[in-house]
Amino acid sequence: MGDVDATAEISANVAKTSRCPFFLLEPSTARHDRAHGVRVLTIPRPAMSDQKERMVPADRSNWNAILKWSMAQQGDGTSSAPAREISEEDRRWLLDAMASGFIDEIKRMKDIIACISAGIEATHDAEEIDARVELMEELTDRVSGVDNGGDLHTLGGLEPLVRYVASSPHARLRAAAAEVLGTTVQNHPKAQEAALGCDAMGPLLRMAAGEGDDSPPTDAAEAESTTAAEGDASKGTKELVKARVKALFALSCLLRGCVRAQEAFQLGDGFALLKNCLRVDHPRLRTKALHLARHLATLDMRFMAACVDSGYVLAAAASLAGSLPRQLLVATEVGTDLSADAFTEEDIERGQVREAALRLMVDVARKVDFDAVPKAVDHLRSAIVVNAINAVGKAYVRFGREEKETYRDEMQLCAQLAKMFE
Image 1 (cartoon, helix red, strand yellow):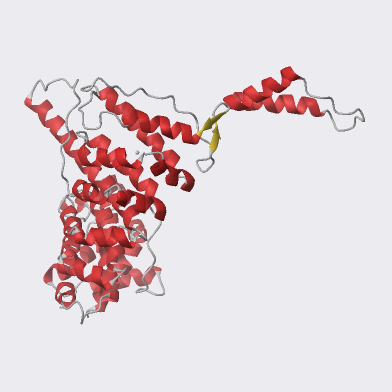
Image 2 (cartoon, helix red, strand yellow):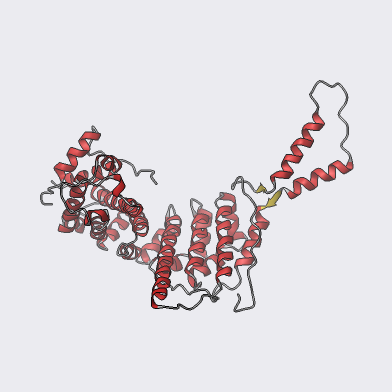
């Protein structure tokens, strides 16, 4: 690689805050028919206290009454009188209170599955969409427990979720279904195999690639002006991108620790799909695509080769250079520092893209077998990578003191990558 003119400045900034400027840190923690005469009815959602319990309390007032009654029967502990036998009336009251204070998790999940399984491919009105999304969000909460995640397939819940991802005309419903799928299979080998058995990989890959439209609700009023129509189109585009983000989340959960899923992902040209995600100017989509690609590339040299051969390192470098704070385009004076007040929420998200891109490139440089993957040398030494490092280094120079400390991890990664090819 040629000389990287920002390396010295980056290293100097890092040295002020770290005794080991080129130590690679671990990732930071900074881190839901009517066409067929069917209508979903919203089931009242009970409060939840512990998602991992099979039964959860729903009405705290009953528990307060039980506590008061129980304490009244105990006395102060000094009486020698024998405990009296509970009356049949008190027994019935206690059992009724306890029964009304719990909800059966399995029954609740069955009810939700039954409600969302009809009219999957139909177009719905806004109220119907909201109702289905709310039910799927609740289902996401419930399957977050390992036991419930395993039960979902047994209850017949995975198949309709895959159908939503594959064929629902509403992006919000596809996104909600993908989130339930991802939460269900996360760290759950049995659920991962069940999802693959339902052919979840193909629809998730297509959804992550951006396939599918976002049909407006059936009761949506027609746009009264061109401006309104453009606003609706913009909203639809945002929903489609959000759906892609949820699809990547589900894919990440399905791929982690599941060899069969990883092989299916590679056969489906998954790295080309992830590269396509980097072309969309959406920080969360880019960040998730970069993290997933990095995870897979470091698992096995076959995936590393697929990653490099697809041009992913070059695409990551382009994302790195293209995710600088937008304020840099306004504050053009070289001597002007960017203070914390100048950074927007979007700029913070763009910082996550930069860190994810740098971590991917550093890990590729550290772990790739250059003999087995000769393209890696050319890509890592390419002008695209050099220019991206220089652009980021020059941006760091203009960060204020507080921002330099906030983005110190990025500074270390950028300095390390530059130093590797001096």
